[in-house]
Amino acid sequence: MMLFPPTGLEYVATSAKGFVDKITLLDLRYELELADTDNLLSFISANIDIVCVSIGWDRQFDEICQLLNRIPKDIPLVVGGYKATEKVEELFQACPTIDIIVRGEGEESIREILIGVPLKGILGISFRENGAVIHNPNRPFPAVDSLPAPDRSLRHNEYSLTVNGIKICGIKFDSILSARGCPFDCKFCTFSLNPLGQKRDYAARSVASVIEELEGLEAQVILFSDDNLFAIPKRAEQICDEIIKRKIKKRFIAQARIDIARHPTLLKKMVQAGFKALLLGIESPHDWILDQLNKGFNQETIRKAFAVLTKYPILYNGYFIYGNIGEKEEEMLYIAQFAKEIGVDVISTNKLRIEKFSPLKELAQNTPGYHVTERGELYSDMYSHAALKKIGKKIKFSFYTPSRYVKILWKNIFVTKFFTLREVALLFFIFPRLFASIIIKEQQQGKLKDTLNRTFIKHG
Image 1 (cartoon, one colour):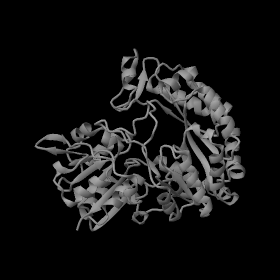
Image 2 (cartoon, rainbow, N blue to C red):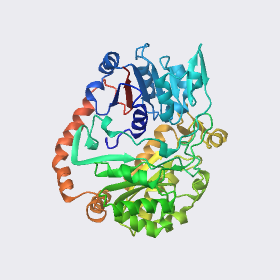
Image 3 (cartoon, rainbow, N blue to C red):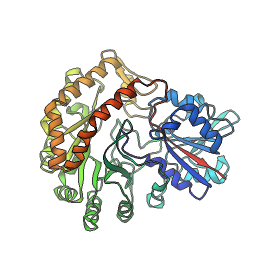
Image 4 (spheres, rainbow, N blue to C red):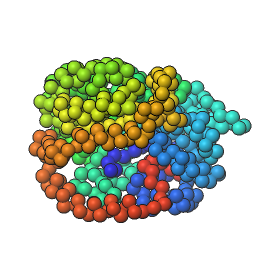
């Protein structure tokens, strides 16, 4: 599915405006003609003076490096993103074509690169010099209200409910970032850290700037991509109040912690404002694992929270982690049953990863029988990658029964009213065509099928 735009890159591209003659923002999930590597390289050679690439995930890392190494050496290559920030040394070694890696947030760094500030004077970057890699000091984080909102006119694509290139229901999607960083310290999460130890403290935009951006959005469905929109409940209430006051008719999705259950007034306002779904990090039903992950709550707290949350017409997606250090198969499989017991509507399960700077890395290394790959994949002598994959499938099959799908559909239509009856009718109308396209796509071979988003900047 291709629902949401590359917001992080849009921030960087917007910051580059005025410093170049032309900016071309490409999302290769949509640019099908350029998804072929040769076509993409031909396009770059003919049109681009500087290439900026974001690497956000480990997915197809080797293929990405192969692509970067084919970019002409006379075109400056700047790389950023979460994984690039984490793997500075590894990327420079694997990709001789990379000139600069921007660590962390890149809005200010890209402007200085474009105006020709000497590399030694640009904070927050790493670069090559005489065969060595130089790491400049960290760049202080900018005030979030000083950053211009993403310029959505740079997009080539309309983001809608799309599967295999087929638009479903005609619903447009967009995302908005109302704050950066996270005030919590869950041990499995390293998204707020960069390789040189800099933590992104929680910093919220003004409510006025958030509302102003919301009023300019055309999409019907908006994702608040904050780590936790409700970190400051009073601020979240103010956002809801303004949405209601200004009659902004959207369907909102947001990430949250179960702590939100302690704020019934906020929950009531969220419903009024149009919040249809919450993405909640539950992680585990087991107290000892929750403690290991430093979640700050236990199973009893989770049950009490959902006793409150399920009273509100909101769809709840629960994130769970399995394959934790010391976790047995029966404990992993209990995730499905627990999710049903507390009233979660949808679950998302992921194997525990031990990232390069994870506080859990030392525990994993010191626990007999556990191993961490270079890419942060955790496995053990008892549970191999293949075994964990099978357990993950068992969890999903146990939770997603036919009756579960009926409940999800019913809640989306009649309880949260996320979808209208007309939109659901369109979904069923288009399903046969969608199924056929999936079969065809699975038969295609030989194309780079990554979901990376890349920004290409054209100088005059």
